[in-house]
Image: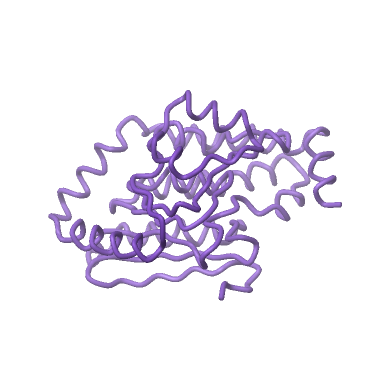
Length: 255
């Protein structure tokens, strides 16, 4: 059973040099600001933990992987400062994943929307289930996926990002996501996925940790400007979230 906590849940376990980090929220594992902050802090701590060679990032339950940002918190944004802070939550998390010294393996059991797709894109390797369809819905509510776009584009390229973002009501299936490079492997069932993920993580965690750390730096080359870039993107999103057009759409959803 998933968490009922309104500020979400976050659990970490470390076994055989592999840290498994599991986040959850009753609203389809969406991210409230507090949960984003706690997850970023956890990754920062694990980055410096010598007992950890590898991180597996997963979400609670057997349904949605992540519904993106908290809809209720987006509705509550009332001024430009609040808007920037709201969207900076994902900026800080993606940068924490980027800067983490340990490779991050994503486990995606179900659908991901918006910021959830950004989190997947910021993983270094991703095991996904057939049920893991993805969607970037931002344009349909009057904003756009500005903050997560650099992470998604890095994985799937501009053409696929265009296809995904410009059809905000269309789900792309797991095999589309694998073909474009977002998912590394796709499995029919979760039992097989978890078995293969366990074998993969055990092997990877057994390699020279210094080599893994140095190789991660290479994989993320060219992203050194993301602290500034993602903060600037958060400002654009915050401004658009306050626009009359967006507020009208959001209020119609609320009703």
